[in-house]
Image (spheres, one colour):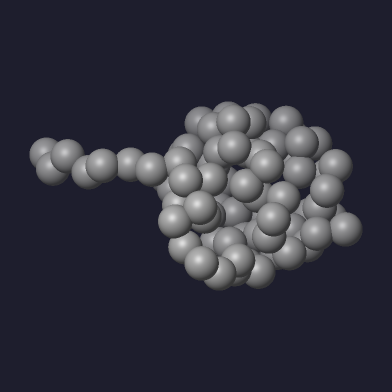
Length: 89
C-alpha cells in the first residue's frame, strides 16, 4: 500500500488563485462526505459532475442537500455508480 496525503476541497481551493467553474467529483465513495462536510466549497462552482457510489451512502440524501443550490439530474448509470450532473440555480 502507498500512503497518500489528503487535503480538503476547501483547502485546495484556498491554495489556487483561480476559481474553477466546473468540478468533476470522482473520489471512490467519499462524495457523500464532501457534500455533508464541505458543502460550502461546492457552492462556489457553477456546475458539478459527481460520480456517486450507490453502496456507500444515500443518493436521495445527497440530492436533497444539493437541491438547495443546484438543479441536478442523473445522466448515466453504471453497475453500482450513477453520474449526477448539477447546475447552480
